[in-house]
Amino acid sequence: MPEKAATPSPRKGLLLRLLRILAWLLMAVALVCVTLYLAFGPAQLFERLKPPPPVFPESNGIEAPSAPVAAAPVPAPVQAPAGSQEMVELMMDSIEDIWGEFLARGDYSYKRAKLVTYRGKVESPCKDVGTASGPFYCPGSKSLYLDLDFLDGLQKKSPDVGDFARSYVVAHEVAHHMQNLVGVNSWIKDMKEGGVKLSGPEGLMVAQELLADCLAGSWASYAQKKYAWVKPDEVDKMLKVVMAYGQEQSAIPGKAPMRDALTHGSFEQRQKWLHTGIETGDPQRCLQLFTGIAQ
Image (cartoon, rainbow, N blue to C red):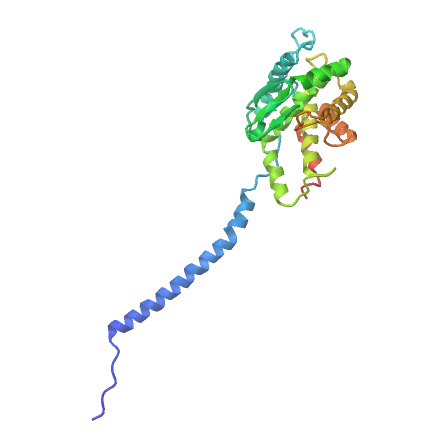
């Protein structure tokens, strides 16, 4: 007699169906994973985490924080201290008053930079090996280094605008701290990594320095109401003195290198943005210098 064909067992058929269902589920999970990777993978996540363009609080035409009320008698303008150490201390207090109140209008708080004053040269600043001279700012440690010999030299070089020059130098370096606080430094670093030109007349480094000039001008627009030596009509002469002195000091043979010779950008560029800051008192206007660079 012929043999009967084997009948598949019900258990084996059920197992095959389960395997098919499992295979389809694995394919569906793989498809979902690929879709999520393409939508939220490292490249897209990096784009999402990139800091937005920095925005300074609006000025709203508010007067300087230290301005007296209308009914109060107007105090005599403060005269410049003779010593550069005293000038630095006065400037740090003034800048904190003005920028502190200004940033309070937005979502930022002013945190004073760590101040290091020295004479001639300083060893291993910004975690670097070697020495440096002149005024400069270390963004990593939020430290401000001010060379009192440099400030004294500005005063002696041109006594008529020397006090204005000394205060401008401090305000310029603290402006780099301001950029750090509100995210400008991170934004610029991001643009650099995206291929935006770093050096050159229209590069990011010059734009960052011109922004510091404009922010220093914004400080001066308020400070002129209190300090007798802050005179906007003398800003061009003061700027020429600072740029010439910085270039002169950086060229001295054997002198510790200057991290910031205050010679970035042309005189015309720096003049323009200093005046923008002084005339408007509005840091948001300063950010206009990045128009086109970040495109």
